[in-house]
Length: 289
Image 1 (cartoon, rainbow, N blue to C red):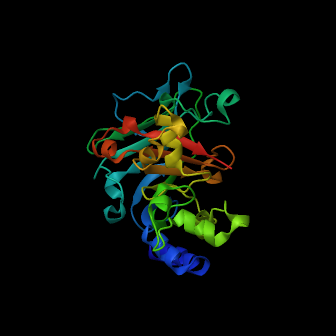
Image 2 (image 1 turned 60 degrees about the vertical axis):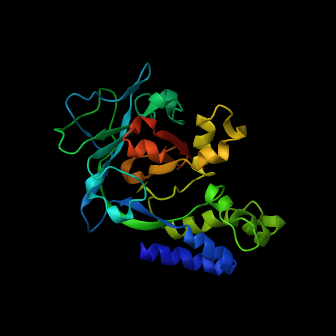
Image 3 (image 1 turned 60 degrees about the horizontal axis):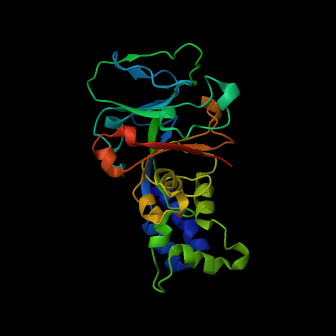
């Protein structure tokens, strides 16, 4: 994490007022990046075929078809000192979504908002499993084993931490940046620009930490979905702060994964649901350019 944090910190100190930079750096969180080359133990896979218990049926969306297997994460092999969310200490997380590979003529551009259109399965450690091939008509993504790399993650545009964190003047970080940039660049996501610059050229598959949004804060989007009043609900900001990133999966040529227009797939969950093992409470969304 040190190299990522040092590079991101250096950019902040170069481009932001000292107090704003220092406050933003305090908000950095470690994230576990899933990379195809690494020196440590294998922590999971992207694509390929999942290992499922015999009694578990392949996840499907009623009246639409089977979900595509996206990734598996072995919780026991993750570097625990960098895990920012209450993941199980052992067991495997399996991520599925209905992404159009089964019916590309109908769903090739959008991921379903319906909760039955995606799934997180948890297989406890020690459970007998066997590799399962997809149902007929569903081609798997090419398999890539992944390893852990620790990176620094930071809040970007519209994230609630930028509104909650203040400097000595009483301004929030979001307000302070607008003041510095001036009217001409008031809408610029300067925080996002720096995180993308540091991550340039890398795939941002990740477990825990802060999400790397392609558009606005993914927490805000989830909050609008779960609240009856949507974006205008008076509880919106409070609800957004209740969600944490479980995992995100980037578009990648090597795995043939393309989320919209070179976008990102995100799974979020409330920490209390994660701690209780209620993985059916996780929500999925996609953002793209």
